[in-house]
Length: 168
Image 1 (tube, rainbow, N blue to C red):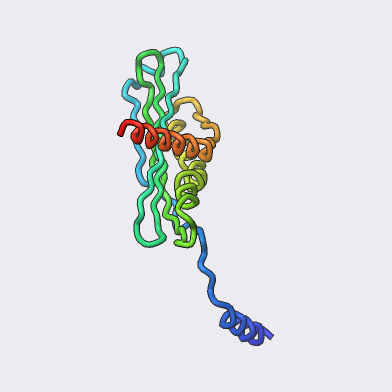
Image 2 (image 1 turned 60 degrees about the horizontal axis):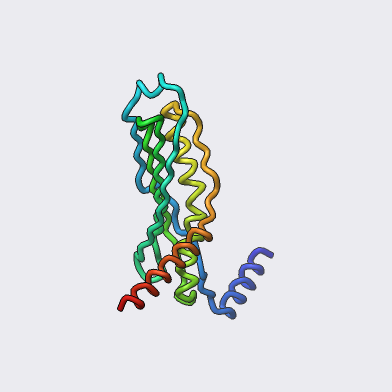
């Protein structure tokens, strides 16, 4: 019975042309991690009224046909007064396959918003772990709407292009 199913499965596979996968995750990995607590141990003796500054950056690189590396960089700087309590940085990366059949605007959306949405939970966990291992209070980052960030970025690029045309 099992042999019959395999034969039938093979026959069906031969009858249908293989379909190209439009999008696939090949690998997710931590590319770089950095943590500094330049004012320790004195910072632990101060009253904890932190000011958190969070910086997000997304970069993508074409590795080969249909294959891209997307890197989400998160830098968290936490200050107490004028003293830096900690500076933590995570570069969370992924290798993604994006088919040629996807139009350029949709490819930009995938690489600039969809892929960072996939990478963010990994980066958030890594950052939280770094901070807690240094015995600072828990750092819980709120979700980020990368679709809105990407839309804002595209709008800024369009405004800059329009400004350059007006200047020319």
